[in-house]
Length: 334
Image (cartoon, rainbow, N blue to C red; front, side):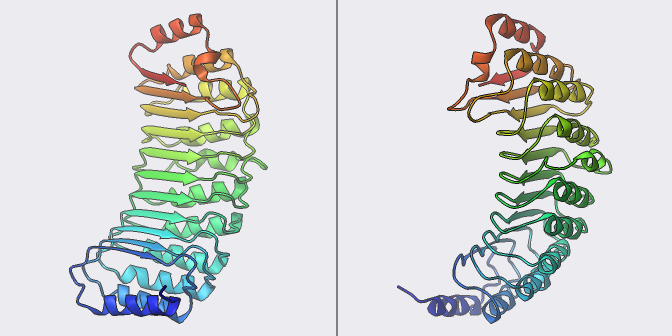
C-alpha cells in the first residue's frame, strides 16, 4: 500500500506534466493529513492548469488550519477558467477567520457558476454561517449554490444571516441548503422574512430542515421569506421531524395561497414516532395551496415507517374533492 508521502509524490509528478488541456480534476484527500506545505504545494500546482474547468476537492477529516483555508481562498481565484467546484470539508474544526477567507476567495472566482460546499459535522455555529454568507454574497458569477451543513450547532440567527448574505449574489438562480439535525427554530426566525426580497434571479429553492425545532411560531416567518422572492418558481421544503401540527399546515396554506410565482411545490412532512396532524389538516393545506395562481405540480409526502402515508390520511371524499379542485394540477401524495 502506498504511503501518504508517496501519494503526494505521485500527485506532484502528475501535475508536473503538461496538463494544459486537462478540463476535469478530482482530488480525494479525505483523512490524508493534507495541511500546511502539502496543501500549499498542491494549490500551486493546480493553478497552473490553464484548461481546468471542473474541480472536485475532497478534504474531509483533515486538520485544516486558518492558514490552510486562507491558502485555498488565495489560490482558487487564480484558476482562471474554473466553472464548477465541489469542495468537501466535513469533519474539520474550521476557524471562523479561515472560513471567511475561503468564502471571499470563492467569490473572486470570476467564471465560477456552480459551487458545492460540504461542511457536515464541522462544529459550524451561527458566527461561521454569518461570515460564510457575507463572503459568498460578494460573488458576481455563482448561479447554482449547494451548501451541506448537517449535524452542526446552527440556530435560527445563523440560518437567517446566511440566507441574507447569499441573497446578495445577483446571479444566483438555484439554491440548495441542507440543515439536517441542527437547532433552527430554537429562537426567532422573523429576520428571515425579507431575506430574498432583493433577489433578482433566484427561481429554485431547496431547503432541508430535517430534525430541527421548527413550530408554528416559525412557519409564518419562513413562508413570508419564501414569498418575498418574486422570482421563485420551484420550492422544495423538508420539515421531517419538526413540531408540525394542523395549525402549522394551516399557516403554510394561507401564507402561500397568494403567491404569484411558484409553479412547483414539494413538501415533506414525515414525522417519526407518530404524527401531530391528520387528514383534515392535509386536505385543508392542499385546498389552500390550490389557490396559488400558477401552481402546476404539488407533492405532499408524509410516508414514514412509523406513521401513515398521506393517502391513508385522506378518506375517499377528500380525494374526490381534491381531484376536482386540482384538475389542472399534477398532484402526488404518498
